[in-house]
Image (cartoon, rainbow, N blue to C red; front, side, top):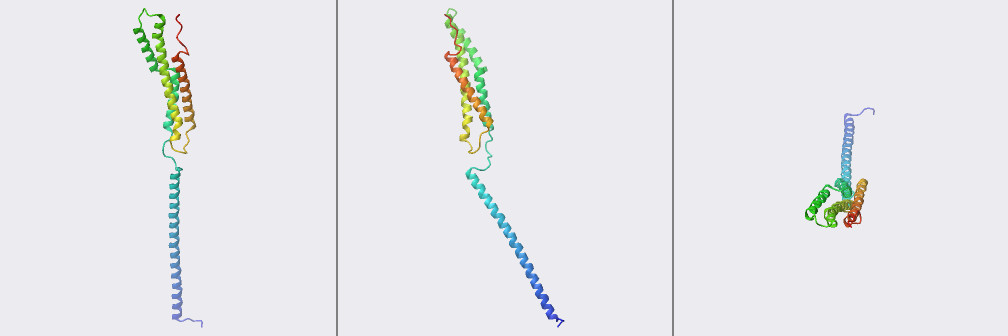
Length: 197
């Protein structure tokens, strides 16, 4: 009873071997299934991420790679500079006023009345200076308003930098003041020609 025959030993060994092979086979099958599950999970995660990206693109939530606001900042600075030039005067306004003075001197005879000489020589030059100041003020106003209105026509959800708004509003304010002063100077309400009577 204690001894086993060779056939029994061989049968047991064969059964154990078969069981071991089945275990190895089952383990390999589990590993393959596990790898397939992992791959399927990764693919599903990639598909979900792609769907989210597509939805963000459609909703406008994607990171903006478009305008950085450099153009708007430059426009705001230009607006403020034009407004300042409208108040202080420009080279072109000075040259135009000098030219108008020269034309007035050439076209006015020495026998003309003092009032006519003052108007032709100084009054027209003063109005020319006011006109050029008004043009610069108008440009400052248009550029400043354009910069402030730009976000309404740009990428939705991307706010304009605070400093751009501040400088643009400064340009608009300088433009309004410069335009008002130009109109007052041109019409004679501010610093009118002296009386010659």
